[in-house]
Amino acid sequence: MQKNVHYSFWTLSVVVGLFIIFYILRSLYYYNDFSLFFLYTMSLMLLGVLCFSLYTPVFYPVIGWWEYDFRYRNDLKTKVYCDDIDGIEGRLVDLRRKAGGLTLFDDLKIGQKLEIEPFTTSIDGRLSAEVVSKRQHSIGRPYTYGVRFHNTDEDSRRRYGELEKYWNFERKAKKDKKFKS
Image (cartoon, rainbow, N blue to C red; front, side, top):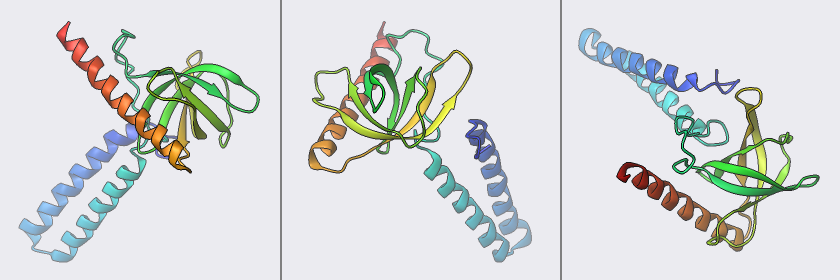
């Protein structure tokens, strides 16, 4: 599941985590064996580190598939520029930990350099990124790319910070608007 980047990885990680917690408590109360307690605790910590490292839009972008009304979706319209493609429209569906989930109907290669320009007045210029992962959930739907943003200079770090602030503000505003109407 982890190799093929299936979302069921999270469900099974929770189940395995609960089993490990059960065995931690069992080793303390029934067996009084601290070597088993240490072993189970280390395995729980290892599972936690693995889950933390994979909780990024590169591997598992959070896509609001349950939201059918586009007025309330947590995505941002963008234009994407790269070597052979000039100004295709896409959507930034997730933005966390200096990475993003980008949906496009065009087929890109892993490792391809991109420049992403969001449709907003608060961010001036383009952000450079690199395609790190690629998946297509079903035929006829767009590809979802995991992109990592390159923040090499002060100007690109500032633009990414502005984009992240705008992203979080818009997400909260859309959520508030949905439940107030």
